[in-house]
Image 1 (cartoon, helix red, strand yellow):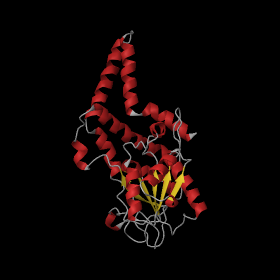
Image 2 (cartoon, one colour; image 1 turned 120 degrees about the horizontal axis):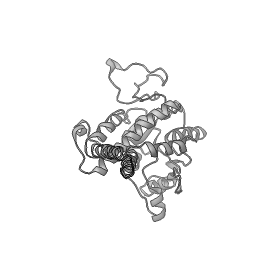
Image 3 (tube, one colour; image 1 turned 45 degrees about the horizontal axis):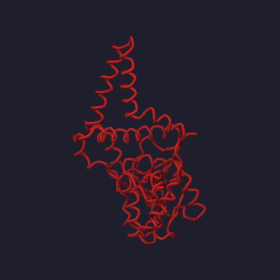
Image 4 (cartoon, one colour; image 1 turned 135 degrees about the horizontal axis):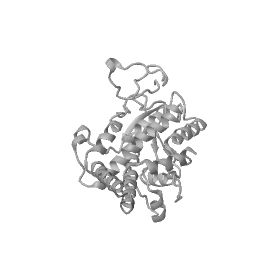
Length: 299
């Protein structure tokens, strides 16, 4: 039920939809006895469209999300048990119709997974993603990931495919269940999570809430860093898209926290633990500085 409610509410709450509704409703009112209010709505909508589409607002909103979690020190012992790749990197509707992989803007998730698979030949590659479509159903993302990863040289016996999840919290819960059945879950196992940098805070909060300790490996950065805080967009569509992406994550963080799907409103990196990991009572980091990677099990 949460999945369907979240989809419906987000369609109405995303900035681009709100702006379109504001302009559309105002345009209708202009032809009625409420013309003055109609002109106001259209004017406000047009101003918001220009601000969201051309100003650096999208970068301002997404940068704190991207900078929240640095990459884990994967070269530090013990070596990773495996890497978890979250779905969202492929347009399954197009890919299934065309019979070819159809990677989208988040395709770097898959590219990094293959790079890390070659760098750590003993590590498992776990992919989590089902069919999140509502009106248009397609095969699970795990099916497309299996085809792509094996074609890029990852042996099938190194893959763990989870094909039921439809959102980030379900990614964590279903993977934990599958790993437990396969004997791949426990304090001696070190799993590294691969997802888009802006999505990493919500993903880490969801995995922690599910009792699954993972380390972050953010990819798919949309900004260069603070240099982009003053960089305007050259097309309205690009800027508006960036605002939508960032707003979706901020709203998602709030919704996950309020519904008990995340362990914090804005999850943060945890310090390394010298003897296991306790997510409920993290130790303070030295001099208040953030660690280079979150908690992981001892070798």
